Length: 534
Image (cartoon, rainbow, N blue to C red; front, side, top):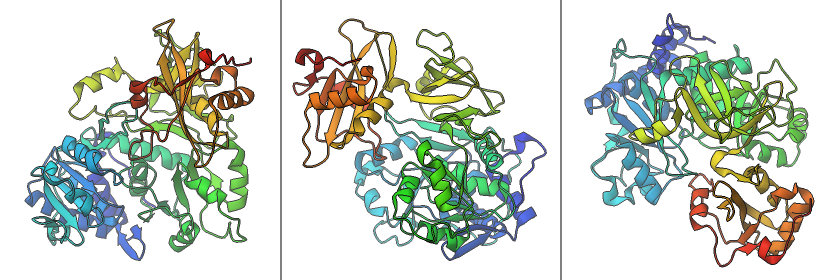
């Protein structure tokens, strides 16, 4: 282990990080990818050789290099090489295709687009929509005419680039949001943001000598870099990486790499929990897991079954990275809590009238950085969206939270997904949880319909998809919610639909549902004479 220390915070730079690790920690393994192994020194050599080749192709300070690839060592070489030139890397979600893919590439305005052979067909299907972007292909380039082979970019023995003019606040990456409440935005991220987030995670996890961090997240996801790749780089420990998460092979891969730490996202840890129990469930090297989100009711049984320690939860987003965290010196945390504010930010919870929310009240989470370059550098090519995201020094996250008397924060909903009716803020997130408990419901989305009585308030509507072969009436579903949840969770409007509009990352685009609003097929509880019982 070799925790990096800079003479000044302004020297924080990802290019300098790999250079320093090569000098101070060169023989330590950095990247482990199946049978491949690269030490810190070997990685830095590859990065320098690739940077020289990219410079030969015309990549320089401020230029953008996009990539559309599965996780592999070359992605790490590329990202660090791009940053050593003062350029900006732009990951493109590998689930994208068609319009989503073309739109994201075009709006990124890259000089180069690096792809692997697995994703070449999706890119070539775009045809003229790609414009004159230069394509670089890792692997066979037979499907991509007039492209450059990735391996041809390496210039053997290339020297260390000059990093003396680079600063910790320089934009080093653009991360595209999912676009669930509107058009996606390109989050411009500085070097310092990554350092803050990674050092906070290493501190929270107690990362130490002998640790091996295992990453199974896709590299278009910022969590892969914060919880895995850059975290290992900054701590000077090995990183084990596979291109995909596999339930059936997860523990086998942990043993193969002798991994000690992992971060799992969404349903990954739930799938591990739901897998059939085995006598060797705890026979592995993993000691720490950060499963987000982890249902409180299975946390302790999960730890006992798999012989691991569950690390603290938190709240983060691309624009602000980690703003709330559960540090492990304070356990157990109150059920449902995300934790307390990190040392990097101040937090306000602001009600719709602009007043601060009292203890127990709902309010939008506003964040003010305590230091320079703690938050993002703005939205790429979108100054209006950047202005709208701030109120003075305060960044408006769009997340609605509440806090208790001990300053523990609890997630309620996204602001645009929170419905206010009769003076009450209703979490659509919680309404959906209530509806999904019905065995006939496959998926659903709750959102607001403008109230007939008051412009500032909304009625609840629930669009619902049933499992194949299931039948359910609107009144039956309303009664079920009424019986199992607070009465104000019962939607006035219910509509059964064949599908919901999703982003390529399977997030519901509620703004599209709000645009559609009510249809002739919408059931209206008021007109049907249904009244929720208190």
